[in-house]
Image 1 (cartoon, rainbow, N blue to C red):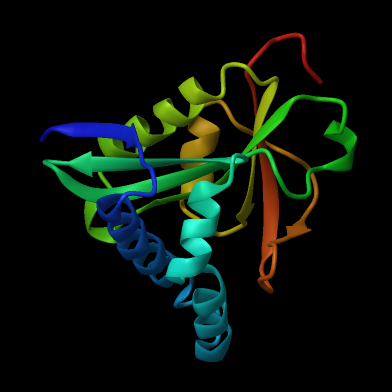
Image 2: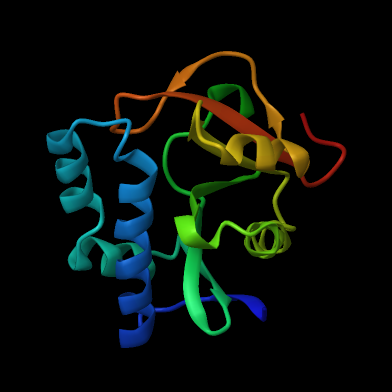
Length: 175
């Protein structure tokens, strides 16, 4: 299988790939955790074309798409905007705000390609952090790849789910 992860921009193809990926992955991720109404509200607010175009065009965001045999099968959004853990306010942070792979493409090599690109893009920062719901199977994947789970239970942004912070040091002189 040929796997490649690349930046995506606001072209028609890029928007179409992200529209498909973001809504499908969010549905797969949350369908068993949220009520149908909560899920529908979340999807319609965050995964509509206007919102996606706005987020793609934001200079605070970088979007990555992973392809397996030329098919878009996952994506990540890195961002410097939004709330951050207050105890890290003096650090140069970037957040993996979204990271997902379609359920029928969960191969380790696909996840690794996407995460490796996220880390590579983040080299100019001190830390990468993630706020992910506690039961997400990707939490253990992130931990296996150098992310440390912070003590405490937090809240997912805009969703009624308990979450955890995962932090990866890029430079050893941080924290």
